[in-house]
Image: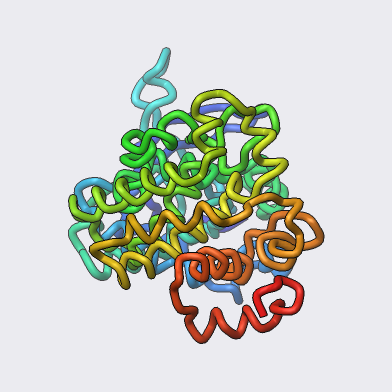
Length: 368
């Protein structure tokens, strides 16, 4: 247990009980977070170091989010263990007031973050860039853990059931990402997308009546418009994308059949390449080149995609491209190889990278 030297950090806090142990939720100014939670691997016990190694690549992204949205950011609470005796001064003796008061933590107490190390590091960077943010608060959930004996188990317990939201759900809820906004727009404005898009999950079950995922629409449009991350999407971009996908839908008969409920979407996924995200992605890749080379007559050129045999049984064409050993592959190389089929059908030249990929399977794919 850390020895109290008479000085302490004091925070307004609420006291609660979990599993018979007291815990505290304190409001901490962000400017002191880097000071009370010093990250130094040399000070962290060896048996805890592996689980506390920072992924430095994540920090600039989180810090940038904070700095770029000073009036509209959200940070969830940090969770920390305190190796010291703490004092809690309640605001009253009975009722709710007895659990609301001031938490006093010795300044020489050792504290480890069980959940939120990357947020802590990002806060430090953000406050350096925008000192005014240091006056904002972040909630910290404190557990008293003498000797930090429970920290390892706490880390495991906190992360055991953590599940990242699907990319489709993130796309649905992300109002800062212009490509996510475009995906939502197209999922309502393109007829075939409006009725056949799965907006919550990034995979489609066999029993689903949907054919596309919101995340696959987003990925396809990133390729179609050739937009870098966080680049704005203009109204012209939106209309162009809408027109492109409406035109594509006119030339893939099975999509229309699914829209009219004439064929189960599960049957399409079983039998056709175009019923999978890889095809949508590849259509975006090929579409970008089509729009660039034929800005005036791309709709007329696009009619040629009717010539493509999308059947999964057409293994001479699709094995090694969209499929690997009969299974659909989402690898970047397979997306490009699938796009090659579309580009050649449309009379578009392949890039040097695409030509190298093409040569690797030319004898099997039948393109020579």
